[in-house]
Amino acid sequence: MRSDERTGVLAKILNVNMKASDYYRYKEMSLATCRAKRTFDVVGSLLGLILFSPAFLVIYCLIKREDNGPAIFKQERIGYGGKPFTLYKFRSMAVTSESDGKPVLCQKNDKRLTKIGRFLRAHHLDELPQLWNVLKGEMSIVGPRPERKFFVDKIKAINPSYVLLYQLRPGLFSLATLYNGYTDTMEKMLERLRMDLEYLHNCSLWLDLKIIYLTVFSILSGKKF
Image (cartoon, rainbow, N blue to C red):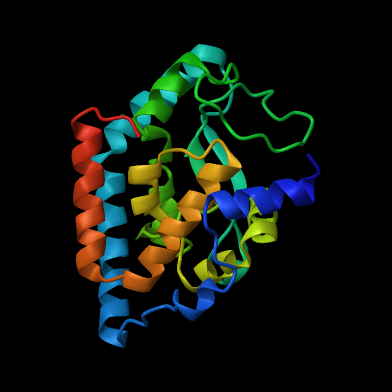
């Protein structure tokens, strides 16, 4: 199947609305609400970095012990306003992953995952360093998950409404991740986009608190998503 045919099939399967911008408009928050959200991000990320500092140290040592490679993984993602930024994660894959420079989505039983990396990813602990991204103002605690340009371009080729997400800072937590899990196929990427657009349309501090509660509860209860 040619790429253009596949694009058409995916759009039909997922009922992608190419004119979604008529509905998915950013429900602009008041200045006070925006300041409250940013204040929450700063306070929350600072507290998180302090409270989880022992976990940072343990995870760092475990990663170094396994293969002596770098513990922190840096990758360029597309964020607010469509601008690139450097995202930080605990490295969960072998150092040689994507050594050919070609981006590849992580699969469920991906052989590139290290032993400690598989555990970190299953429990979303590899995302903890992104608290630093939140503190810097590149991300928010809640918002659409940021993606690499390579995959952003592929998603936009099917649904151009992806650009509407540039109105928000990408998030550490998101409703799409909670209910759609990690995205390892284009179908799941498009479903994640649909859910992110719904968040864009309905975003509020109350919804953010609900997403944080549900995510933390799921992680602490051992639920894998």
